[in-house]
Length: 585
Image 1 (cartoon, rainbow, N blue to C red):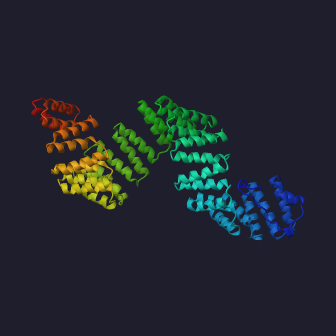
Image 2 (image 1 turned 45 degrees about the vertical axis):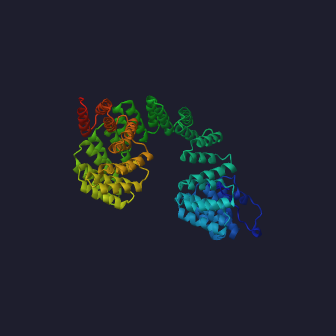
């Protein structure tokens, strides 16, 4: 039948047998699938104006003319005919379904759903009505309801591929790719020549990072439709994620051959070249993407990265500027701010964050970022940094992270009481905020309150038992308090979670204080092995060497530690140790 939804709908005319009319030229033309729309409409009009038909028969003719108007893209004339058909015979469910389809095409989803609901009431086995209503619900992001309708359509007709596909898409929208894959697999099983099943399942495999399966499915899709650039391109993406760069490049080249205006294929060629270390090739490919689509800022941003890696900072800066000129949005200013930060051009970085705030004045992250930049530019600019962090709290007073960030700034400033107050608020808002528990404990330790520090570390360990830092920090507090057994126990627990040089050399110190230099040496050796550039690890081993009466080894470790540029406090301790051993610093 002549409808815009003919591919998925079959309309059966309702003509009561008692009133069936003998064939006539106008009757046949009005019903014809092959007549030109204007000819068919004229025939239907003559039948209507002849006033020979009434009731259901006349309703049918109006319905036929409505469908022909739809075929002729004349929705304005189609709607009155649908209305008249339904008024004359309100018991035909398919008429409501078809008028619902017209409302859907006109984007009047509310009326469309109402008509389709009425169609289902009149004919509970109308699979197309369930299918169409499901598709409308899907457009309205009501995917759970859509799935119910798709499921009912499938129960009525297990060969309705559009219903499987629709349900798969809704499952994907609800982040259930397993069920989406199952529906696309059902399509493939029932209609292996329907490319949408292979392509849809390939996309789901890409989303699930099942790249080998994605390659297999897109390969099948390409066999069915070898000239579809999208399938070739998507297989290229799967190869790219598999790091099979030559195959990915071949697919992107083929996609470009099939669709020379596919800018993303040029861009992904650039990514392949970048991964292969071919910066010149990447720059050329990103330039081609920019030529094909000059209005997408992603391509100059990507080329800027290639210019940076090549060391051409002026051209990198020009591409960052160009991206912002195309689209002066928050994210693009943020990327350029990071570029300036790497160059230690703090003023320009801060200026870009100013623009981020201008574009998105309610961004807590932007104020946090600007605060950190102010401190990097001037480590003593606490007032300006704290003003930004306070503004972040005003924007989001229930954001535990905002209080945590300001607490960290107060701690840097050595305003420990205000830091603790902010950590308290962060923990009140988020009792399982492990970082806040840990850092509040560090602050209590800075104040010399080891009991509260230990309690805080314990809370951090309870909130996140898999982080080795918290047990290590508690061990340090026990070590500073002189509780060597508990300190050793915590360092051992930390090492069991993840080996770390600091945990080993701290346990070494505790063991040395317990007069076990042999065990202490094992830990000190392990600490140095884990981090050969750790001055504290070398210092710790030097202390063990002294206890073992091995002064020359101690001197060697002290001098290695000194060569690593330790901080002022460690440098003084190293120099003192060398002097005690009769060696020059």
